[in-house]
Length: 84
Image (cartoon, rainbow, N blue to C red; front, side, top):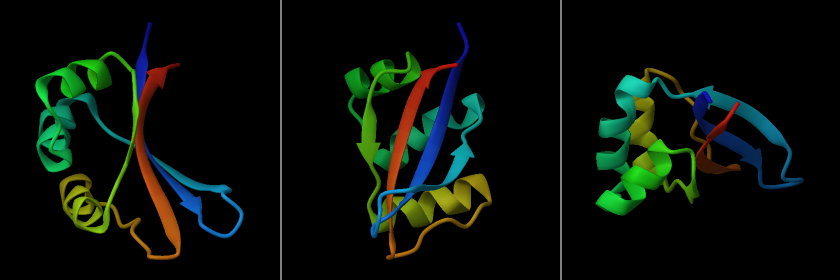
C-alpha cells in the first residue's frame, strides 16, 4: 500500500478542489512540527489517517518548506494522507 500526503486547496465559494500539492515523505517530520501535531497525530497521519485544516501561519511555513505558493484568503486548505 502506498500512501500519498497532500495539501488540498479548495475554493471557499463552491468548495471545488483547485489544487493538490504532494508532500514528499521525507518532509513529514517538518510538516508535523509546523502543524503542531501530537505523537499520536503524527503516527496516524503517517499511516494515512486524518485530515487537518491549515491556518494562515501554518500555510506560510508549509509554502517555505515545500517551495510552493498556494495560500490565499479566498481558499480553504487541508492536509491529508491516504492510500493510493
